[in-house]
Length: 142
Image (cartoon, rainbow, N blue to C red; front, side, top):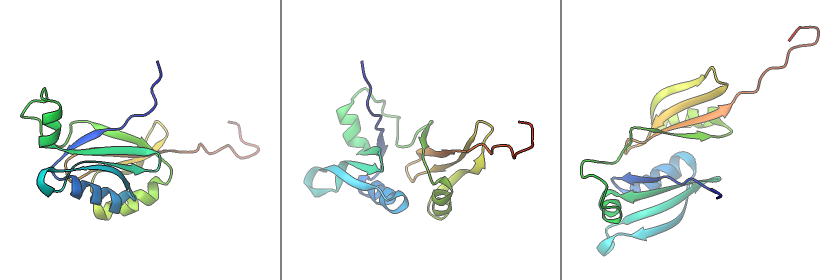
């Protein structure tokens, strides 16, 4: 058995708006899409951000594809998508003006500098970068 990638498929209110949001904030590139019925915008799209991929799908379309999803389930989530990256400080500076920040940039006890933001559909993303340990100076006991 071999697992290769994890690509979240996020239920969103408006696929076109979600694609535009991630293009503006994170420089996402739209790589694939499915138009909605009768030219009503996109019903599904995939974007790529570096090596990461995200899919966005309308509530109606996703619930048609997976009828077992309860009617009460709406866009947004009660979990956090954790993304390890380089350049978290630069992203945080940009996100502060374009996203809802739920947890500000902070170095955590487990060695990650991270922050958590929420997108317009309620999904929570934690962006984290490993912190390099500072080597002891010569003459100091480690």
